[in-house]
Image 1: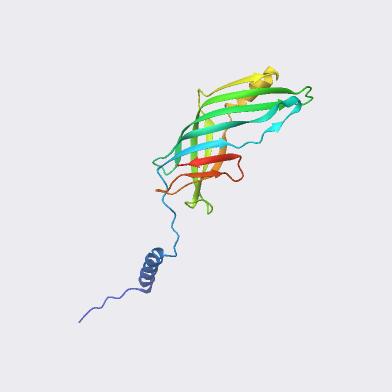
Image 2: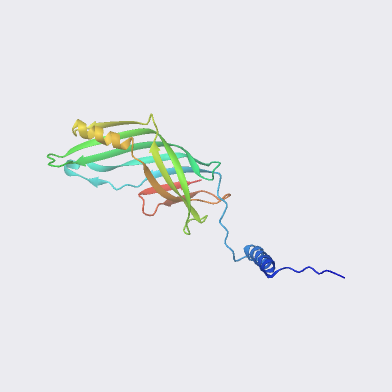
Length: 192
């Protein structure tokens, strides 16, 4: 007497699905996400508008952030960047504001950066990163100008405590640098 073994219909279906998945997953028409780099050198340069105020003063300024975004053990990116800022303000402020005043904020220091990776069809790698930065302890700022002291102190406190974010494209491993003016953000980015 011989015994024949047969697969049940559920097992046969599972084997067929696995075989098809392996076959289709390796075909030329299947888009796989590009491999990302383990580190990105990032340079952000503000592209803020400059608006003329009364008496020739200017609202605007410029800011740069430079650093290395490193992949950590959890699959996220992070790092410490250097931030250098020059902000210009002129105008009246607050309820019942009287005469216009002007101030200049100069800032320099470290910011902690984290990055969340997201799918992005417009990015060369198919993914982008949402960078979030926040001043670290020891970040410095000086505010000078004709505005009242409480306003100058409030501007300084805001600068030294506010979190900011931008979304930028990521390049794939082995690719060259990328320079781009960010869509929806007044920043120019260089990614290496």
